[in-house]
Image (cartoon, rainbow, N blue to C red; front, side, top):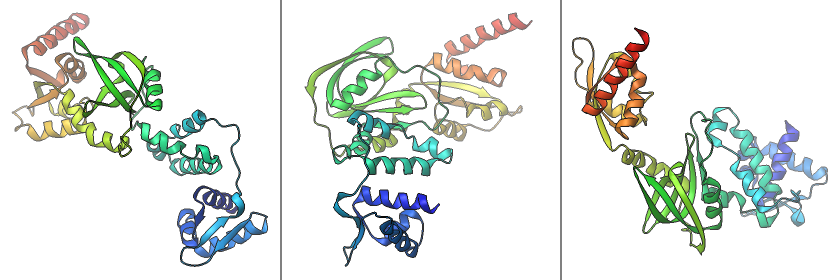
Length: 322
């Protein structure tokens, strides 16, 4: 344990230049007395660590002493900081391991590559709280990623319903949400979001754009994710649900807030315990595939088109199992 702590102390000083005993103690989760002993041990082993006295003082390494990662390109360094997924890593109990690994890499990088984590964080935010889905990446994902790294304007063909539209986009970043990639970019005066699997063409020109240095991709996604999902729910269906169907609906809807709003808006159960609910959905075909999973625990009341689709499915089920 102590050997690992001494290495962490050395790497902290390499990465941050100067730190006080209290700052080191807080980072290493030990007492300041332990920090004093560890600094003496490093000094005795030949590491040139010394202390600046006074209010602005602290421990630092003499003469730029450091250990480096040699032969690492910029692309490789930035890819390393894309590899850590803090959410899933935290769920598995590996958050400290990921943080420690990133600290070691950052401390060992040469000064010219020290901005790798900042550049990566500005351009890519990975949001994968659930299970990974075994789906191939969208065709145009690599091309969009290269444009994002280079801050280059793209012309994007996008499938919207039965139509295809073309947009001039300043691509700010990519977000991976539950196995689906989204492009976040500026179109005119607005920042918009597009599903990458609906992109039909990408043209990357020679035009570059000036990235807004204050734009926070992760913060923007957190603020816009809920409202973006609401814009996708353009249709509404009316259903009658059994108690079991209402419980299972939670696992079929697009977002938790949809389920909470549906439950809050349901009236009193009828004599059989069933309730009538109005459910926002992306489209009638999507609602059909979602609600079909409830089987006989749901009855579609409206629209008539969806009710007919369920009636036809029921007839086919009857023919199969009669």
